[in-house]
Each structure stands twice: as C-alpha cells, then as structure tokens.
Length: 105
Image (cartoon, rainbow, N blue to C red; front, side, top):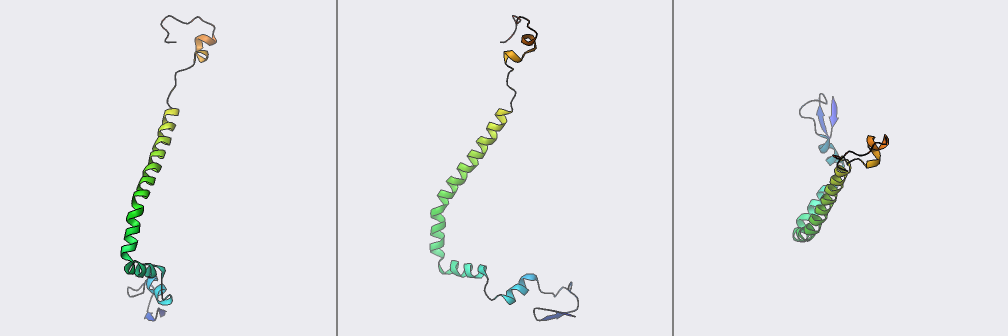
C-alpha cells in the first residue's frame, strides 16, 4: 500500500490517486499562478488598461514582422526563378557561330 499526499491507496494506477498537481499543491503553499491571479483580481482595471494601451503597439509590431517575413520569402522565390541566359553562356556563342536572325538577343 502506498501513501500519496496523505491518501492511502492500493496501487499507483488506482483511480483515486491524487494527480501530480495535487501533490505539488500540498507541498507548496503559494504558487506563482495563485499570486498572479490574486494580483489580477485586485488590480483588474489597471492590468486591462495596460493591455489595451500596449495592444496597438504589439499589433503593429507583429504586422511589420509578418510583412518582413513575407518579403524575405518573396525575394527568395524571385531569386530562384529562371533568369534568361546571358549571351556569353549560349552554345552558339561558345561554338563561335553567328547569332541567328530569329534570336531574341
């Protein structure tokens, strides 16, 4: 028989076994989450006002970040696009043949 957080149970997989959160809560009287919730409830108006004030800045910053990411991706795609070959790289030039009249270059 094992004892978890003051509860005696037959096997660790028994359904009445306390969860990890319950055992941690018993050993730690105050968690950061409970402190932050307490602060939020006591200063709710101030917290929400600060969030509203920062929302526009954060939104604009995120929009710029996404735009820069889009432009980088677009530039990378354009760089990999097939560019027309330079005249010096054409086979006719390498073989010293005169350009044909139907050539685009």
